[in-house]
Amino acid sequence: MTDQEEQSLKETKRAEKRTAEEAGQLAKEQVRKKAYLAREQAIEEAQKASKTKRSEKRAIEEPGQLAKEQVRKKAYLAKEQTIAEGQEARKLKAKKPTPRG
Image 1 (cartoon, rainbow, N blue to C red):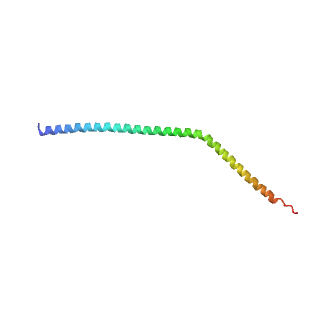
Image 2: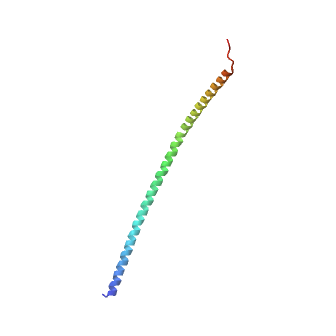
Image 3: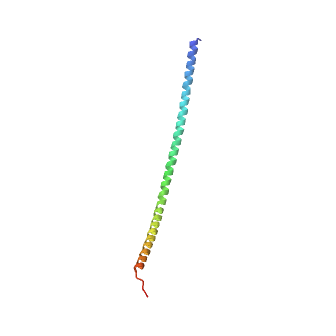
């Protein structure tokens, strides 16, 4: 075998080896990409489930929160009315002449 034939044979083997390596790398990259997409999908589904759960919880709690807020508002208004009535009573008492004896 001549040097040129040996060189050509080496080049062919290198080219075959490089092609095989590239195919292997491509296969590994496809596996990595598939795994990445599966992880992303799992995360997305988990977030969607959490969002749904939060919405359901909020829907359950909201009427109770509104009722509590109404009770608080009524109590506040009653307190304010009591204060206003007390002030009005003091004003009337202050204006009322005191009997002198």
